[in-house]
Figure 1 (cartoon, rainbow, N blue to C red):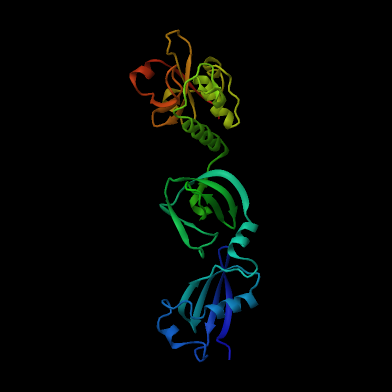
Figure 2: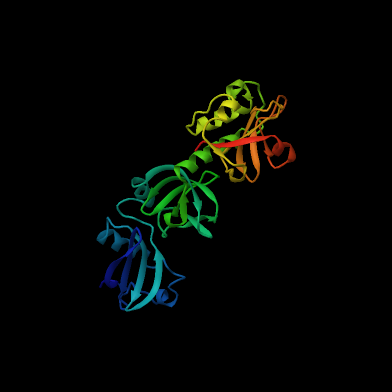
Length: 289
């Protein structure tokens, strides 16, 4: 005698829910299972997998619901796919990406695979920025700061625009160079360090933008921005010698802070541009993206 009387599939996101209608009179259908279905979800595990493998070999099943008539006695996450293992199935359909995303949900679960049937491995919070490396079936594949790879729903992650990606690259590169020595005429790590415009030229090059070599020349590129409208990624220009012209440049990173390479004997550092010293020497700002 079969241990079930009927079964059916219902759509569930990127897969299906398999509803199995149990035969209460089957010798396989134990009283223990009925007594505590949530505490004994593996009692029929082998039978469920056998049924799914035989009847739905090429179907992705997210959840199995066990029914007695119209009564739900158990709902069990089902992460096996008999056409391939979960990891193999996900990997075969992943489209590679190389961007960043910002979490829009108040709390976002990171799962081990691209469906709610996979276990939660981490939690992200609203405003968190994360590296996105792939997408598949309504999910983004992400890489956490500790190197782990997981999946989040596309509904709750907003990808950075092409412009924002470039800005992120500039700022991330500048931050990675904090502490690098000031070197007059320096424009690469191979030269041991950077002067102010060498630093900006190098960081913008990493984002695919060609800046001129000197701060005075860079001050003629891009679009002029008023002091009140400066945004992260903009270049800020100063006269620190009293010559009346532009002779210093920094990268604005937000919150009143710039990263720059100030002078001989110093290093690449972050500095507030809201102090009287820098405000009195401000010559303008330019936006390259």
